Image 1 (cartoon, rainbow, N blue to C red):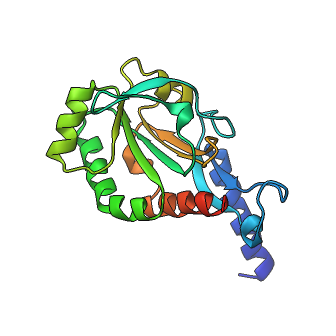
Image 2 (cartoon, helix red, strand yellow; image 1 turned 90 degrees about the vertical axis):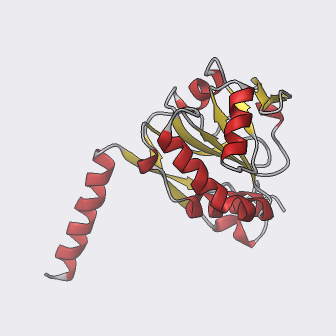
Length: 198
């Protein structure tokens, strides 16, 4: 196959992916917003069509953590935040995903990234699940599903990356965790968001 034919084939393949409903979000900002040599770097993650929260601040919704303490989403500032929305304690696939996140939790914490799980379960159930799976990161309760609706279009399996200024920079939502990006890619991007603020 000639070089031109190979290029045409690659282009058609890329167009096919776009037509199938997948997009790409480049995490980059203008030179005036992101000082330093890393400002020209753009990281990309697959973006599932649906949520429209990218580029917007976290809403000022008040949720309750697994210990019963109130927390305003819009107050999550100062470091990158990785929000993982799940169906709840009854979901076997969600438990598997939480175990995968647990394996990365120490590295996430060392990177200065705050990992938070969000479910519609009441705090007591979240606390019990957290103990059962020995999870070191906090849970937030979203009983009315206001947060998942506002940020993920109501799709239960959803992950967001938020920069230290409280702006949503990436979101991926689907009905299945099998379509989620690898935790390594999410962690690398969250770490980059934090380093760009230094």
